[in-house]
Length: 544
Ligand code: GLN
Image (cartoon, rainbow, N blue to C red):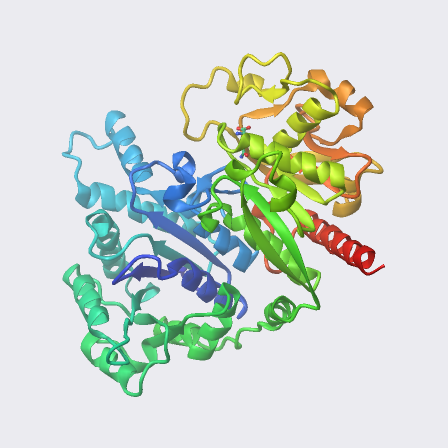
């Protein structure tokens, strides 16, 4: 597109959790499918500098970008929908904004001025919003503001939007996402909370251009006109967003409602073809009309909160669609697993993923799960801590190191088969200090990993402090657990496999961050295939 970058802001009203991330990603997808270049950014109003130090119970998984930023899980949606990598610039928190401003103040860059929310904090927010636009590669920068309009902590963000709209005029557009609650007793949808929420936004000086209304039921006749009248928007700019069967339906639903059309029209952009979503629809078809099904267990300690394992869940579903297989996930609580109940808990599952994590809680359950799948030939994918647990399990039960452990769990073990990386030993701060982001990895000839990836070299994203202790490499190799993926520079073990097993792979990295709708991840595809094979074998055996 010729001309300046357009800025689209997505705010939320009435309540949180309306799915601003999915609406932003869906609009971005529609614009991308019309031939535009788009990126999406998330502004988070909390004071943590990044979500890396947050407990997953707070905000779900921490998503890691190629450049090693620990970010909000919405960035995962952006990447899965758009298939374009994000970076640190795509997620900014209040903590980071204030940290930058305070650092500048300490360096004397404000030349003796009193440093204030307006203009210094808002200038810093605006600088972050426009940094992506200044790269000169994006036609659109979509900025999603976390939280709900009216929250004290989102005020500086809404104020920054007001200023940018004033400065940039026609290059900016605001979409406000609201809720139409359904009153069971009167059987009606109500527009009043939407009206109030728009009033709140207006009181902060921002007139929304488009309203996206989340609703469980179809909007009644005349409702769009009513909302338009009360909120100063065109009736065509009131978009209905019904609850979807899957988040991947939303781009098509938004296309049908004309969200991208009204956005382009309001920004004065004409002459672009309709969004071509054929390959997206092909994915949806495979996803929704699978030929077979398979049951997979996800063993972790945060299983009550599925968002804690968001990218893994999505990666399994992408790989399922690729294999025309419905993947049913059984969420298995690692703390509740023990040697006595493991067979029963994992019964009927054709593959097990052991999840990443930190600290001791649930570790022994993970180890029991791995022992069970290793001894019974059940396909296994261990991710990060899941891989480390596989190494510990093998050490204890095959190599006979009864107290084998990670020094994260037991600093005094006689067999520290997983140990802290050398460069981590002097690190004191918790935030942003792990081995983070993409690193290359060489795969050994003849390995299952190489066969699955169909390549000799890969690059995957990391987030950990501990690693396989290379002092044990040879012992493990002789005993049948082989390192088949190595970081070429540091010689760190990135992948382990068990030789006498149909499909047993542990990876020190996080493949889930790289799985997208259009490019499901090779490891997950291979794992689901192996699980399908296993379930067919079990069925044939039962029938014989
Ligand atoms: N706690 C482990 C480490 O720091 C694993 C981290 C993870 O699973 N992401 O090495």
